[in-house]
Amino acid sequence: MEKLLIEGGHELKGTVQVSGAKNSAVALIPAAILADSTVTIDNLPNISDVETLAYLLEEIGGTTTLDGDTLVIHPEKMFSMPLPNGRVKQLRASYYMMGAMLGKFNKAVIGLPGGCNLGPRPIDQHIKGFEALGAKVTNEQGAIYLQAEQLTGARIYLDVVSVGATINIMLAAVKAKGKTVIENAAKEPEIIDVATLLSNMGANIKGAGTNVIRIEGVDELHGCRHSIIPDRIEAGTYMIVAAAMGKGVKVDNVIPLHLESLSSKLREMGILVEDGDDFIYIENRKSLSPIDVKTLVYPGFATDLQQPFTSLLTKVKGASIVTDTIYNARFKHIDELRRMGAKIKVEGRSALVNGGTPLQGAKVRASDLRAGAALVVAGLMAEGVTEITGINHIDRGYAALEEKLIGLGANIWRESLTSHELEEIESS
Image 1 (cartoon, one colour):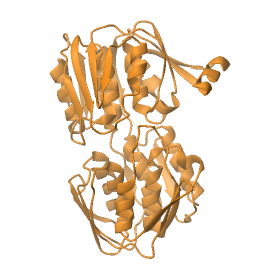
Image 2: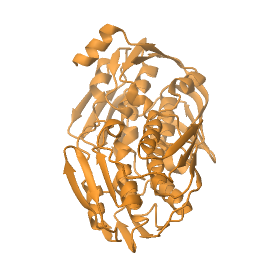
Image 3: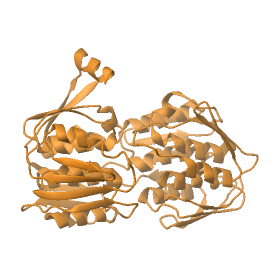
Image 4: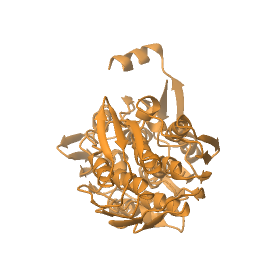
C-alpha cells in the first residue's frame, strides 16, 4: 500500500488534459453485455474501476482487451453466471450489472455493491423499476436475485431523482417487450452518454437528458464503437485546484455547459473563468469572497464537487456555508481538514467554513473518492508536506493524478507505507 505526499505552496500554471467520464464508463462497460457482437469503447479513464468491471465481464464468459484508453468487449459467449461476492463488492457501480444481465438473460445474481461509504444509498428505486418490468427480486445472504419470465414495458415513476436507477432501468428496458416510460428521470450528461451507446447498438430511446425517458423495446442489440464524454467531475476538480493555486490554468477536453454551476460559483468568488469551445481557463486575480453553496441534482452544483470545493473555501476570508442535499455522510473530509488547521463546523447537512487561516501539512486519510480529492486540494494549498493515506479511493476516480498535477508545477509523489503505518490503519 502507498501514501500520497504533497508539498504545498507551489503556484500552478499550464494545461491539464481531462480524461473520459468515470461515471459514464462504469455504466457503459456493463451495457456492452446487452450486445450480440463486439463493442468498442474509446476515451476510457485509466482508473481501477474500469479494470474491475472488465474483469467482471470476463467472469461471465466475455473477453476484453484494454489497450490504452480503448476497451474492446466480445459479449458473444457471456452467460448469466452468479456474481455474489469478490470484485463485484469493490465498487458501487457494479449494480449496473443487474440491469444489463436482467435485460440480456432475464435473470441475474449480483452481490450488494461496495464503493465509497457515503451513508445510506438504497437501491430501492432500481428494484422498483425491475419489479415494474416484471422481475421478481429477492435479497438472499447479501446478494440480489433477479428473475423474470419476460420483461414487459411499464410506466415507472422514480420517487427520488436517481442517476443509478435511471440508467439501470434503461439497461433492463431496452429489450423488454413494449414501451417503458421513466418519469422523474435524472438528467445528468452521463445518462445521455449511456443512451447514445444503447441507441448506436440499436435501442429505441427518446428523451434522455429530460425528466421523461421513453423506451420502445427491441429484440436485438448489435455491437458498435463509442467514445466517452469528458469527465465533468475530474474537470471540476482541476478547476478548483486552479482556483486555489493557479496563476493561469487551462483545463482542456471539457464540455463547458456541463460545468456551468461550478463556473458561476467560482466567478461569484472572484475567480476569472473563461469558456472556450472545449476548454475552460481559470485564473486567480484578486482576493476571494466567501459564498454559500448548495448541492442539487444536475444541472445544479454537483455533490461530487462539494468536498474539494469545501477545501477551497478554507482559503477565503470570512464565513461560507456548504449544504449537501444529496448525501448525509459527505462531510467525512471535514475532520481531516481540521487536522490541517481548517475552522469548519458541521451542523446537520451543512458545513460552516470560517476561512482565511492558512492550512498546515499533516497526516490525513481519504475516506472516499471525493474526500481524497478534497485532501489533495488542501495539500496543494497547505504550508509544508501533507501525507494522504487511503489513496486507493482516489485511484478509483482520477487517472494519472500526480502526472497531471506535476505537469502544472505541483510537487507530489508516492511512497510505500511503513509497517507501523499499516498497523495503524488496520487498527483504526
